[in-house]
Every structure is written in structure tokens, then in C-alpha cells.
Length: 267
Image (cartoon, rainbow, N blue to C red):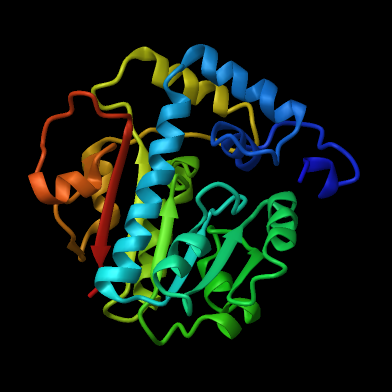
């Protein structure tokens, strides 16, 4: 299905969610998104691999939660568009009764998602903003699909680097964690400049010209999002290879992409 099916007119500027879809090889993007993405590729050729591996990690984490942990409901905030390797497909392959609520603040991405999910009764997409976590947690469509008194898989994947320090992302994540019952899990990835070349920082500058700011954070800074929780081995690590790291306890940064990832149990 082509982007024009979803919207009668093309947006004026590039959009992060649609650029992400483009990097994944999806079709739900516009020329403005592809032009912005091309500028990122020029400064950071690794972006396609980074985006793909980040999505592979998301799939592995969801399989772990649906399979080994036994979770049956997921709250995916900053979801973009559920096109390539999306959560409901991954979760429902493991557990057909799994339910997924997607949340994004971009109305175009949400409109696309609602059409894509129209035939999936156990998945929905709503427009809401991470800066107002209480609105997400009390949204009537979300609470009609998910029972937030029972354990939930909270997915914050490739979203928090779009929140600079002045938005206090630590507080936002803490508010979400505090509202979920013990036995819930947090899945998180975040871009970093640790051990990377100048091209990663240059790419962050290009992203700042789209619909969101961009802030790289160190391992120490990313680890703070997990404070007070029980990290699943191997902890906060660079991608790729989280699933392999769980077995081999790899610690080297050699060959790793500029993204930290972690999965943790909420107490």
C-alpha cells in the first residue's frame, strides 16, 4: 500500500516516524522524508544497519517477554508506524491472545497505523504524547484493551533520544514505571556517541532539522532509565547481539552499533 492511500496531501516537511519507516525499507513515507533520510545517510552510512538491528532487537525482546516471561499485553510508546517487524505480529506469533497498544504523538503516523491495524482486534493505535504520561495511562482506548493492573511490557524503543534533558525524560520514564504493577517489564533502546566517530554526531544534527530534537547519551546516562529495576542479563549493552550477549556475556564494543539496549523487570 502506497503512502498516498493514507493521506490526501503530502506533509510540508520530513517526519521522524516516516524516515524510520524508510530506513526499514517500508513504503509509508514521502519525498520530504526520503530527502531528509538521504542527508542522514550521507553523514552516517551506518544508519540503515542501525535502524534494522534496533528493530531486530525489539522483536527479540518481545519474543522473550511473550515466550519466556509469559506477558500478554504490550504498551509501545513512540511506535511510529507498525509496518516492518511490528510488535503485534511478533507477539501474536508466540501468543495469539497477546494485545498491543501503540502510542505516538504524530497524527499522520497514528492515522497510518489505525488503517494498518483495522483488521486486528487485539491491537490499536492512539495519539498521545510521552510528555504527558498520565494521559497515556488513562486513555480510554488503551485501558479498554490493556488491563494496567496486570503486568505489561512497556516498550520505549528508539524514542528517548528525541527528548532533550530539558524535557526531563528520566521523570517521564519513572512516572510510567511507577504506574505499572510489579512483574511488568521495560524494553528500551537509546542512541549513543560512545566509541563512535564524528558521523554519528553529524547525523544527530541532521535529525534536529526534522520534527524532533536529538540527544545522544552515554551508557551511564542511559542506565539511569533502569534505576530501581532488575535488569535482564547482560544489562545495558550496545547492539547488535543482545540475545547472544544473554548467553555469552559479551562486553566488548568492537563491531557494535551506536545504540544501547536493555530489558528490565519492574519491581
